[in-house]
Length: 232
Image (cartoon, rainbow, N blue to C red; front, top):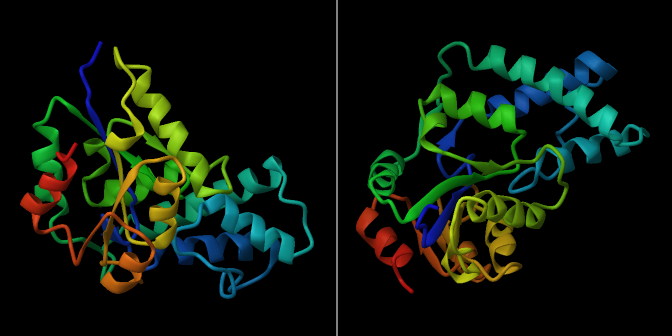
């Protein structure tokens, strides 16, 4: 069994990458194709939420029941549009500062399991991260296909790791890295720690007020991040 002593879980949008709103455009296009509604996401809160929660909100607004069938039908249309969006160069789409260097350090660590905790649909995460050559850097993940509440993703991610470990990793050695208060909230709800990174829509001050255990402007200070991750 693997001797893993800590679990590092990364959000995607605003933490690892900016896709220049390719996801928003793809999902709006899916709602237009299926329901004839353009700008369906314009009045829906997006930051830190799961794709399932976002799709469910819009379906409710349209007077439709957000059943598995309805959500997954929309998901498939969205993924087709997203793949088309990200099959060509996108002005403004970037991998965020420090990401590659931090992942390089973590990949050399046998004691750290590095995965994803994201509201993206699993295939959407693969498309977005694949654009930047990052998908293969993560061995597991918890995604937004079946869960509305982001808090529900932490146990999913931990279960992936615990199945491969001789001894389950304690919650205090699980760290969620994200750019929104909801990333911080889902960590705290399960006794995990969090790093807030101000490369998304929230400032250092806002992430600090949300209760992040460490807040950094970017992930460029790899030594500082690793010192926090190694703290008992």
